[in-house]
Length: 77
Image 1 (cartoon, one colour):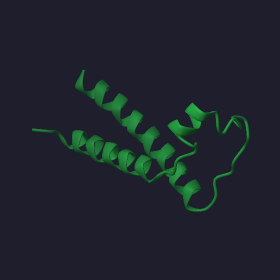
Image 2: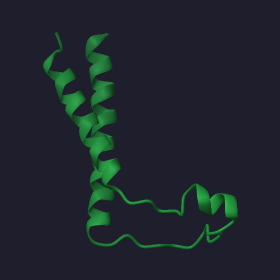
Image 3: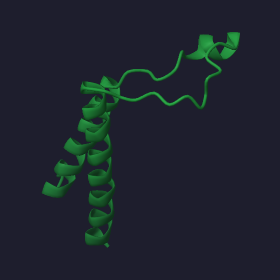
Image 4: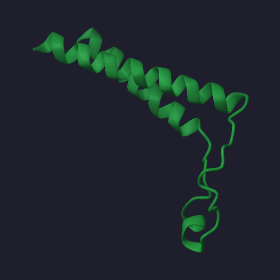
């Protein structure tokens, strides 16, 4: 049976997966790599609106996930 902190870690990981899937692609994908398209590697593109919110939420939840993982490892030792 999973402990309460294992459930929190599981929910956090599911949230990270959903947030990553909600993010849009920032490149042209494999077709752009094969054909040589999109060579503007160092061009800055600003995220705006919902993309920026999802990106910030992903970062925050990822940091929480890693902190929880470290705390759980320390508690289980």
